[in-house]
Length: 200
Image: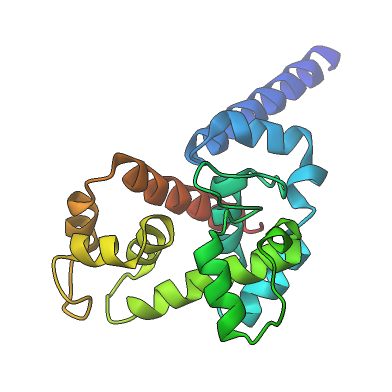
């Protein structure tokens, strides 16, 4: 009986280990996923904020979290190579557009290091990108490419005016910035991982 129980426990632990490895590989970043499992508090501390801001902007919170994951790995003090700031790596230009549109007086770019301000500005910008591509059957890759590389480049990769239907695969093949292509693919993979897991 004891030998049977021991074998059963070993089999269960082995199945859990294999399942965990499988999920980690499917997450788009296995090493990071193991860090997330080892220290969940660090990677979940902005979940409520992300959820409330994403819902206010009519976006899936899991998608916004996937963008935060890709942009900063949840580091609110991250400073990008081109001056992007904070959790969603918002540029000064995008932040000023957000502040102007939302009638935020006395906005200073340093405020992007505040998680709420950053997520609000970044999510607003992402929502606007989705609106640019709402006529597409699958606007997600188009919106992510615009978020990363700008509207004019995304327009060029679409090969048209943004209104005519373009197959997502065609659009992705047209992206001639390897970094942007990898960016779009990695966020979609992480987003799908959160969806499969059923929580952020």
